[in-house]
Amino acid sequence: MYRPQIKVTDCSIRDGGLMNNHQFSLEFVRKVYKALSDAHVDYIELGYRNSRKMFSPEEYGPWKFCEDEDILSVIDGIESNAKIAVMADVGRVDMDDIKPASESPVDMIRTAVYVKDIDKAIYMSNEFHDKGYETSINIMAISRDQGPELDEAINQIEKECKCDVVYLVDSFGSLYQENIQHLMERFKKVIKSKELGFHGHNNQQLAFSNTIEAIIQDANRLDGTIFGIGRAAGNCHLELLLGFLKNPKYNLSPILDLIAKEFLLLKNDIEWGYTIPYAITGMRNEHPRSAMALRKSEDKDNYSQFYEKLINSKMD
Image (cartoon, rainbow, N blue to C red; front, side, top):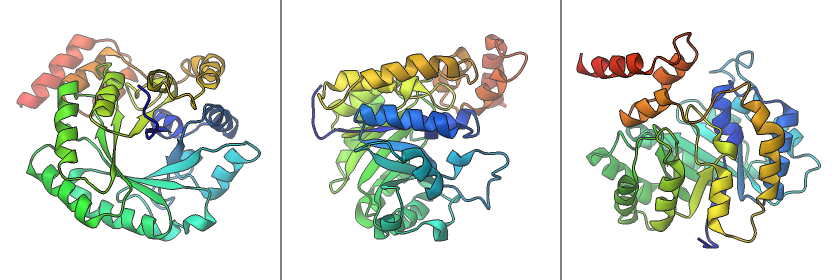
């Protein structure tokens, strides 16, 4: 599908960092940035802009904080038209640390929020906007928050927020295509002054097809990751998405080369992607933290026991 207004954000380092405490080396991040730049991806999200007062730099790598100096080290000497994005979690950012956009290599700050904290997200996003950044609000765990509170949040974003984009985030990989259609229609009835985007997780191997459905429903901002790297089951595969879009500006070859040279080896050190425990949490509309814990245990392949335990815990 060729629609020139569509813009793609790669989240490989940010979402993938959730599987290794953001401990990617500078050399690796530069390789990723170079490949994505050569592929002409529109935005490259390098990590979180979280406060060092809240998270220990001894436990987490630099992409948990994405300080300007580290970003400049990544992009130094690499020709690129891609814009740099970072993610800001509600409640985890020291707003005084955010410089004006004119003084930073960052182009876009994406605010991640649950529906219950939408007031805080709007405040943050507006402040980022006033400092000169492109902005988005990414509504997480939307599969869990589809009641009247969601409608209130959508209306509040449209009326009060200066953000450029509103993302629907299938955090648990539990949504199906009909859910995407329904949610997009619900958003489009209210959101008139901003673009809509979608970020999918692959617990049930539906991240790519759900992204296609979001495109059909007029989403113009799309997220993907190289070889699907990301928390737990990972995300929509960037290589599939770029192939589907048929936009001649995108060049798939650098991504394929990077997968062959770096990501196949990385899979030996970090587990991500579809597994049965992640599928089970997706079916159950659960956060994958319990499945992630299982995958680190000696009992990691006892699928039926995990399934029964998850069901029984909900019945208690």
